[in-house]
Length: 320
Ligand SMILES: [Mn+2]
Image (tube, rainbow, N blue to C red; front, side, top):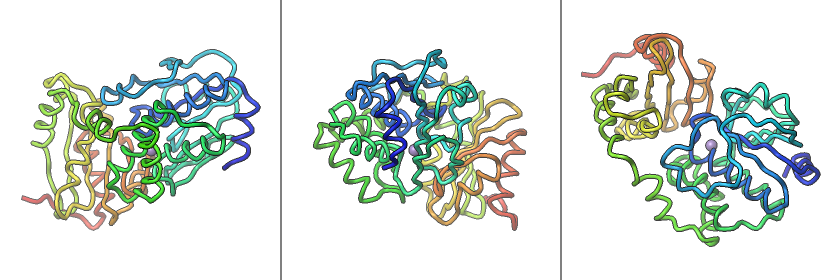
């Protein structure tokens, strides 16, 4: 384990922890478990999340101090978790970058090593896995609350232990977390079987836009009007892109979400044949080989066109 990161923790007293906007299970689970662990070491840990906690992760045990505005205060180090680039923290990332030494803890292939110290391992299944190793090297005893957070981090980032990043190490961590008190069926129920009905009204509308191209690219849209009609917001569409990836023969699944008429958020998932992180990187985004994202300026139609051109430079037609 990185000795500089360890020394910063051992010598410091007060830390700020943060992660990316639109946080997922790995982001929240990792940051919460790490904050709790620092607490057991007698350190002060404040968690800054730009966004509210998505409804499906509200069950996660939270550390004492979670704030949604960049806090004033002096910190001995800032830990930025699960972010490929510092801007992924959202508003306030520039202020955070100037506050104290930054420890960048991440597993994205496209990480740009923005930290003063970089604990980056693209071979790790999740940021939760790197936090787990860090806790081991700090001799932290993982209590049941930390265990639920770490389990959820690893479990969700591996697509319920199904994706390519599902390593032996991922299983071993899950095993250890179960030994520490996690009930897998309870976590799965909270994350995957506790959705408000509105999510499915939204899914219905999104699936009506589903199209495939050359039977290997699947694409669907989600617009602001759909959110309005169904009384939902962007967190309700989380995971839709994974559904359309399930189509037989599809190599790349794309969900385009309207931010406003001129800006669109792209979520891309692959099954191994295409490096979607490289594609998204071409638009200023990033991620992993099989799961990545980016933003595109332009209308919905323009965004679709740009993506199709990037995914199929030789051209492709919409299947009937
Ligand atoms: Mn992650």
